[in-house]
Length: 124
Image 1 (spheres, rainbow, N blue to C red):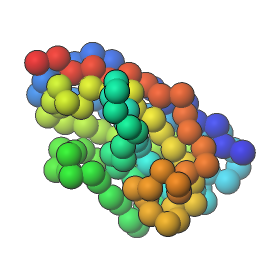
Image 2: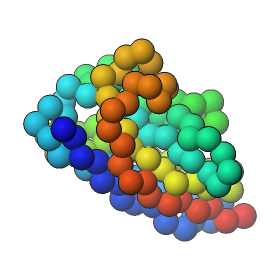
Image 3: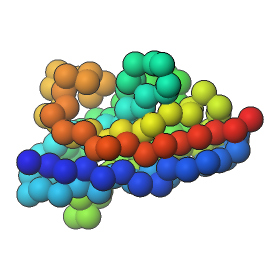
């Protein structure tokens, strides 16, 4: 079992930055791929960024590529999402997810465990 708790969301003006954190519990954290998804009101949950268990594979959605980084600290059982140059369209609830990494980092089917989410609001 893995439990995930997100933090770091909030309100920010367009062009600003936020760093989201996701703290995990469970002994097998290091074996899991970790990703961030987001869901805006009235829209489906979509992939944002993911990192493999080793950190050797990283993937971003086109919408955040070039202005986001994802990293993990296995010793602290935490995954981070740094988002820069935020835009109003980035407004959503951001969810952390953990899973096997198969079939794909960007597929919701990959993930067995989900956090409760943290709200990010970007004003223009």
